[in-house]
Image 1 (cartoon, rainbow, N blue to C red):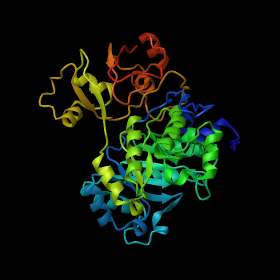
Image 2 (image 1 turned 60 degrees about the vertical axis):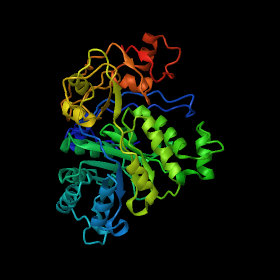
Image 3 (image 1 turned 180 degrees about the vertical axis):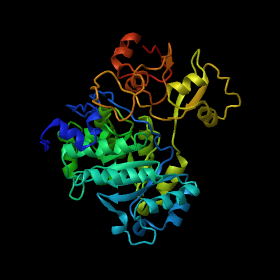
Image 4 (image 1 turned 30 degrees about the horizontal axis):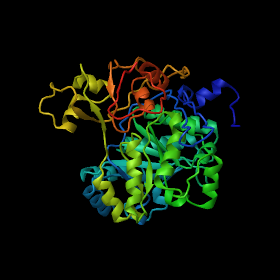
Length: 439
């Protein structure tokens, strides 16, 4: 149990009324994690405005461990990557541990470093460890990082010593104050990908304030006998292949799908086997992941840099249907006509042809409230758009990587309804090229 203030009035005033506005995502526990019984996804209560990273990210811990900014920027620019830089740990800026001349001492230095990387063509993102020991101060520091030029902030939420030690109330206070200060920012919550770790952290509270989840898919560290036994106890046997990249990612995604957020997985950089990273990226793309991250710059092998460069982020693809226009598609995916034109090299934005395959950028996540399963907020920190879904096409051709769940989320319906309308015997099986009616 968490500590409760004496009254609801004290609770609301203690967090400036913002944390109480968060409608928590329903988190469905899967009875089994076997491939034949995936967890049924539940729609998020709130989606926040903010653009997800459009480049793969390399995480940096400290300059004195990973290298000086000049070398990091040169390497990342060469491979077309962005940076995720650690800015603070709890309530302490990283200069306490980083003895380099460029150590991050606060917002002014963060702004300078952000400008340096951006000027070199390397998008600047940030990350931090959240502890909950002083939620108000931690939220203020996180907000200042975003205000200093970070395109996104990833919050490292783990249960080990030196990480999260707060209560559920602290989680609500932190997320509420941060979202009150930065309602349009991109925030990701990063967690240990082993599913039994989720119950040790306030994942629902942080997911409710996040744009995406970033599981740390460190398959190279998870293949111990103890971990294998834990996986088996949850109904997921890695078999003779052991704890591979595909297995670790699959189990993490199946568990996290219930939170209804995009997944931005992080892989281990200290890998000599290029095939393992190829498997990790292939499996990520098959699950509608657009970009991935690597931990961390100072330990990543040249083969992984090559793999990331050779496999840039992949926007979703779409086959043009009768009646489609770029304006309609831009509205459907919350992006812009100009972005679709640029991504596809179209000469005439007024001309698209039925059957034409277009790359669709992920764009911005619109702040919408899903009516099904969403509790009514006391006072919303961001004014929601109407809950009505955009007009659905009369038919859709299944694309590689599609699933009934992904299509249901896209058109604000359910997998069961899609199966019913199309006479499918199983909502788990759809085939590339198959034409579906979308209710």
